[in-house]
Length: 457
Image 1: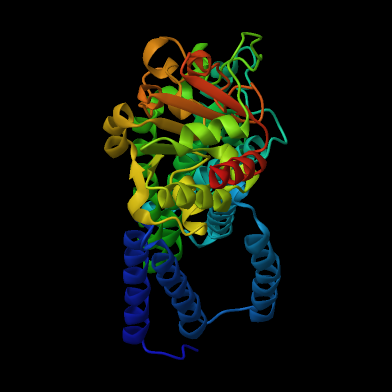
Image 2: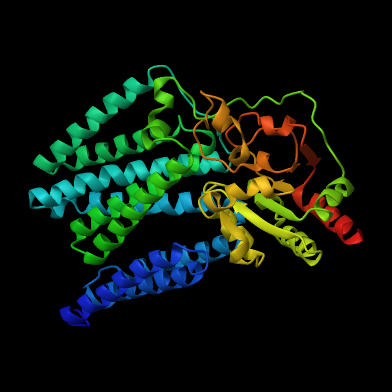
């Protein structure tokens, strides 16, 4: 028996839907992201509570047990996850959402009684399955449990073609006959296609695929809203699908690539990752004291943070160095590339954690003209986003990708662990330029030494 009237139920769902919209608005800026996250969480909580008080639920004990287990697992996991592992966590959350939508649609098959309902069921089963298995593979790639390079086998495109035909055929049968066995096979086909869709993707393209899979999960959840006759699921799924699609296009644009090329490029014989071989060409390296002198006598310094900064958890030390330079009258700004790190906003969140003011975080279009007037560009753990190959080497996996023009600075200092290439797996010619100095080692350790040397000047 419902504890509230249909009118109150509708108002509560409307409140939750508005909260989701405001949450997305808040998440669009680092300044308001925390507030947006809280608003979204409140909306989700209201939505869940509304289901309990408005629907005649069965097996409430089992439902509460599962919620409790999920809470016990998720809270420690979210608190313990490192910033470097955040994209993997996002991939897992995304996959779970898609998989849940697919399973719910499969179980609701026997309640189907109209063409539109069955169409929504078939769509949710297939797309949710693709999203789940694809997200698992992106997790394995980012966690480096499996190779981050493209995985291809002979005739892979033909296998995908046959699976596509099987998926369309299975969906038609499910819509026409409500056959549970065929629906289960459709789910299996979706799971296989999700794996084969992501395996050929490698290098810096993996985060873009995560965003695309997030959009697919949103569409699956929206369709499950039709299946369950739940307006809130429809609204939430549509918002996730739309925002995921916009983000995917924005990331692809930042990479100078089309989504079609990223997803299907490897099937055509190309590759989304380069070589992992380390060059033996000579480079100019220096000490922490050498770098401190360059920084200490500069007037303008641009810092380019990357994944290596996150791995070393050096954001706090980096900001201490920036403050030390500012105390000497040196202007310091941070140049943020849209796809620096492993996901959009990765560097913004990392630096916000160290209380770096938003005013000194400048996006690529804003900071690029300033490199020519910079005395030093300090590249900390970044590689692909400053690689000139994006402009000079046709055929390179990152060719056409807009980059930060770090090479335009008077002096470039690279903080790197080794000469290994970046996530895209290609060599960076900027490392061999005469105005480039390399400082090898863990970013936190080397920045600490540079900070001490700067203070001693």
